[in-house]
Length: 474
Image 1 (cartoon, rainbow, N blue to C red):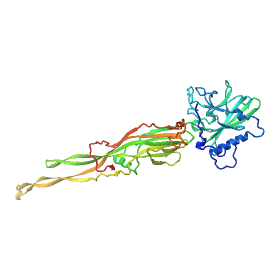
Image 2 (tube, rainbow, N blue to C red; image 1 turned 120 degrees about the vertical axis):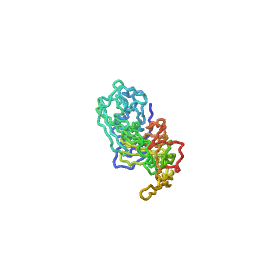
Image 3 (tube, one colour; image 1 turned 180 degrees about the horizontal axis):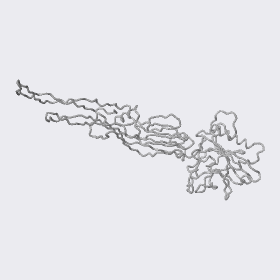
Image 4 (spheres, one colour; image 1 turned 90 degrees about the vertical axis):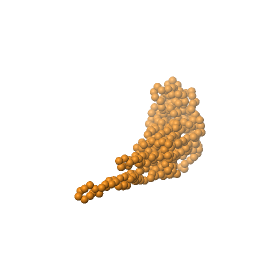
């Protein structure tokens, strides 16, 4: 049987002005211990009101919360230990003192599905003859109030269920708390009003108050591809500048389907990325003179750069109106608020370190290739007679441009990122105070190492190429 841990004092959710004893003018906010003591004293006072019988109806009813005994989760288990036995009981009000922790499968499961013991739904149950006068009909309604005693939800009057074999009345806690487990927030108090129709004495009303903590919601995760390699190699270099736009290696969206706030805890415990650039000089090399013309052969000189990329930043984009932010991310946990029904986008980006050099390729250079050639010069004679000719040496030249350019870029390596969903009162993902506290935090992504390579331009680099004179970003 699952045990319930008391979170009232740990998370400070007892209302400052208890519903049990009513509210007049709003008073100063009390500590959880003071508020609980006031609620208990109010109930004890109610039980001693004039006209109260020797046994109050609430004391006699003494309902219990029990797990289902059926594999389909249909009926409470009358022989099992109650989920919670600590109550404050007044004349017509009952308050469960500890927060009821709902099992992960509560309110869940498909028809015909077998639910394992320890994961079955909870029920609020009481005996038919517990008041002496048999209970012929039972109805319930509920309302919930936040920590400031404001009404935040209601449900109209509906029938309770009856087990004719065991002569017990019961309410599925799913119905009593609103029907959706992921919306059950321990910062709110749920008041269930029971309307019991007795065989002889007619109807009576009792109120049952409790706080409950629903299971972690099934947050929807959508992953998207990294930035496509549509950029020129020089543009990719400039993205990695510390003041550039960065290169997105992973992105995902997280949707909170519940009505209560959650936290995402993220970190990047391990990473090793290397960035390469290929730098080429295109030019010409003279070979020989053929028929008086110098022959030029195109040449390409390749160089390379290589450097580690060690700065990661996380862009957090909210859809709820909260401001977006971009922060450095490493092995330390970062908390991100995931508001009710909100979708948050995370973009993991890499940047070059501010200590890296900013390089530049040399400017284009015009080169002149020259050689000595000969040309025939003839001097004509008078009266049209042939003149004398001779060959004269002359300088000849060709002009060509030699230019450097960044022709390719490649980012490659591996990393590990952790994303954990947790209740908003969990101070860190490693927080543990009980055996079951790990159920309050759930990994949303596997911790396996991810690898990637992004290349743009020619993208071909060879280790045999000499290093460029400047090792940095262009």
